[in-house]
Amino acid sequence: MSEDYRSMWADLGLDLEAHDALLGVLGKTYQEIYLAQKNRPEAMGYFNFVMSEVHGLRIREIMNEKAAGRKIIGSYCVFVPEEIVLAANATLVGLCSGADFATEDVEKLLPRNTCALIKSSFGFKLGKVCPYLESADMIVGENTCDGKKKAYESLDNLVENLHVMDLPQVKSENGRALLKAEYERFKTAVENLTGVSITVDSLKEAIRTVNAKRAAIHRLCSLRKADPAPISGLDALLANQVFFYDNPARFTESVNKICDELEQRIQEKKGVFPEKTPRILVSGCPQAVPNWKLPMIVETAGAVIVGEESCVGERGTRNLTDESGATVDEMLDAIVDRYFQVDCAIFTPNPERLNHIQQMVAEYKADGVIHYGLQFCHPYLMEAIPVEKALEEKRIPCLRIETDYSMEDVGQLKTRIEAFVEQLR
Ligand code: BJ8
Image (cartoon, rainbow, N blue to C red; front, top):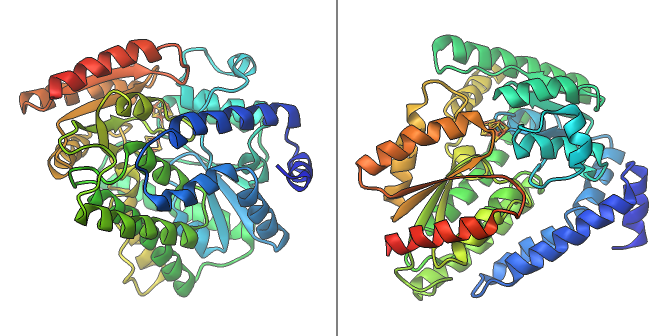
């Protein structure tokens, strides 16, 4: 990394030594998991570049945006509407939370039995190793699960400008009204931060930009229906992860380029694994960068992942926003309609999620489902039990796993996953 980046990280207040250690581990892990794959599409070269510059070039771009007066907003959840952020001439970045860091310090603020994702978000802050978090002018928290809701009360003491968004827990008329009111309040907060009023034109353009990004990912998803699978689950997950922090227009273009190449591969019947490789749908908690543990195990156990029913995946990107509204309010309604369909397990009851899992199994011709639950995540772990039961009633094999970010259980998971893959053959 150039000296130029080091001074940028120092200006952001990062702990350079700890940050070097993080980048070292990240680079090594990426090398061992991603670069070791065979038959990758050439266009994945873009994502290799993005990952090698994840704290470099992208942060430099963000710092340049800030110097030009643009505000940066950080988010932990797919309920934070990027459309509103872009329409106010700001940039939204996802704050990844996919690795353990500064655990001892974190456990002074949060109980040990908190999910790894929440602990990680605190670890990156306390360890001063996330340039996205440090460059953000506003951080958005959301009242989703109890863990996050209560953790934001403590996070409020650690960051300067935390905006907490209330979220409904029930898909009712009242729930929808709450989401609309909260998106209006968020719009005002973003406008106050940026000094930019959202107009019909700016909101329409923002909706189009985010729709284009989602449409590119939809295209990628649908190409994964082919057998042999033209892209690995690891690579598709990476595209879904980069979705959260790359420049939207460049991301859209890069994903479409991969899709062009995948279409060619499908025509030539060229796959990343041989035809008839057991196909797995992963469903459950989000897998944030650099949490690649599960797909690494699955795809080295002789199976291929063909879809992610997850917020870093189809739950997060499904459905476009209607862009035909003639007023800001009409478009806000369309945004609410789109996001209100996200079937996170914090909702009760949440039958749409089970429907979507079954739909995805059929569409992607999955042979089985692995339910991915993070330890101590009550919403997903609880929902996993009826999901597994319903799938098995339909003769769709399901393996329920509960894990964290440590590597301690890799051997045990490998054994269980290999046995599951064997059962699917
Ligand atoms: S819309 S899934 S991104 S809240 S793993 S922190 S649920 S205890 S992440 Fe999520 Fe938004 Fe829902 Fe999606 Fe809590 Fe579970 Fe931890 Fe979780």
